[in-house]
Length: 140
Image 1 (cartoon, rainbow, N blue to C red):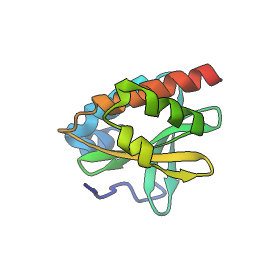
Image 2 (image 1 turned 90 degrees about the vertical axis):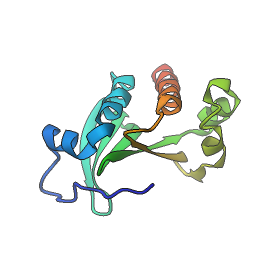
Image 3 (image 1 turned 30 degrees about the vertical axis):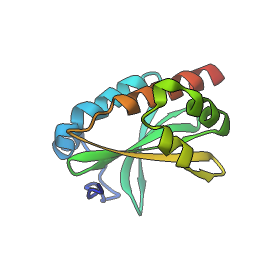
Image 4 (image 1 turned 180 degrees about the vertical axis):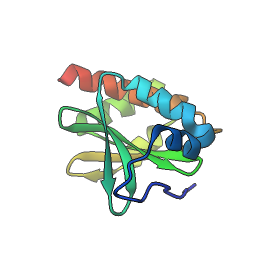
């Protein structure tokens, strides 16, 4: 599923009311994922190719990016080599295991992408992000 990106004006960051309206039924999932990453900083950023996205990070390293779409949002994150190895062995990550195994490698790590809409079962994604938060907090 690929949805349209609604916030493409570089001079106009999304307002909370607009975000809720655009996300629609996916809104609660957006806030559930942000809740898992509580304690990390959040900052809106703009790219010419992707529009506005919310960066969740600690100091300088991104934990994940949330990209608003019409009726959905995209989650983009990168896991490091040691995280990938541990996650591939973790039985609680059985559902996203194929995505972790097949993720493309970049200099920063392995890129993972998930699209979340209103009817999505986000429990596997919540588990993955929760484990990533725990590992990153220990590493800092």
